[in-house]
Length: 592
Image 1 (tube, one colour):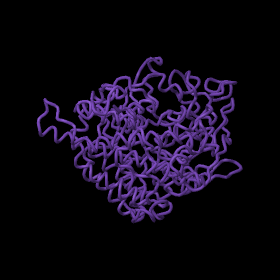
Image 2: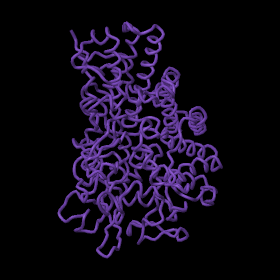
Image 3: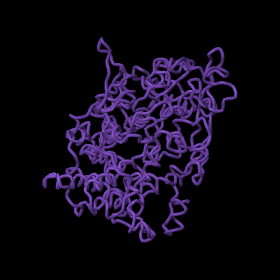
Image 4: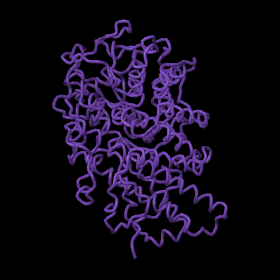
């Protein structure tokens, strides 16, 4: 008898954060017998086993922290550089897309997504034939079947979307393939972008939404992490924005107005359930750093966080979960170190821009010999004090010299606490990561624990989607300003976008500003790699040198070139894994 174990437990090996307790992670709905011990007949003849098999698919949702040989995907962009070797440093950053060190992203995603898709296909194909559990009512049985099939359709659409970002349109498999057969040997024809994304993925999201759990059901603590109706609409909004973008619009047929309408529909239908996470002090003043930090680290079920929409729900982590990305002076390994490029993208606290000109990547325009952009003197920015009076999101995301953190003060002067001589993990950029690092673990002398769930879509993205699409469809207008102000002022910025005549008078300037704003808001959340691709500016952004700083013993700050990068046109898409090309003779991506 065949085992029904082919791709069930594989997900546990691709999850960066180990699910030591499914009950802790998912409110109990992922408790299950190991799939590797079950036969096909057993799973399809027992309702409870079938449900557990379905819930196991949630483990295929990727966690972005340290996923690529202990590196982050955003370290393959202009946002940062890893302090230790391997991972993206010896693959993406060198333009070596066949490097083994990048396999977790470059090749394993192909295999794991198709495995997740196969699980979804099983649920969709066989849900109706699995016998009813004796204690269930007929109505509950019928409702649950519809819900599980809808969840499987959503997850399958998500997995196919992840594949599209990396490989472009690839064969769509909706039947259950024989695990002992050649799997994709009969699937070598690659659909068009419209067929793949619009006609299949977006259609799946539209059709499954009504059968998913409602907001009140999905956001109950006992179902934390389950796919609900708002998630389908939110993902549809993201995909519509991408399909309206320069790289895809001609092939997809999706317009900017349609993308704007998709975001607005979420705001209209689900906006009352979600909001930006805010925090104020006793006097009612905005606490921007705290609010922005908690928008990611608090959960809907323990921290009243109504910003997060779609996320991977994991157990709390301890010191070992953040050690790779904390400063060496804290006992960490350095890890993901933000770039000066990213630091330069943050505005001033009053909402003005520190630099005179920004390009379509969202970055300021640099003097290549001095590594310095032209300063906007009216902003009050001083390159000798680059972190003074800046957007609070900078402080919430980046650890810079002199800031108090953990059990001391960040000190990147050579030979000091966070830049000790001979320590190969010391920051190459002069900065360390603060975003996504729960400081409660440090405050308990590295003995504490905290949640660091991986956020896939949050409400700020819906607002940013609407602002970007509406600006492209209609040009600068009050609705665009309002969306941007909500996101910026939550973080503590005091100025209004409507008061910036340099932005309101030009669609092009507003476009570049929105690109910058999106980069800052979603730094290290795996938006940047795909945003610069859909904007058709990846060669400019990802081949750009990585800049950093040195701090002298007297506190003098000097800009420096930290790393050079390689990015060619063919790298807009990953190469299809060689083994799949050899096995199936599928057409590889251009240039590979």
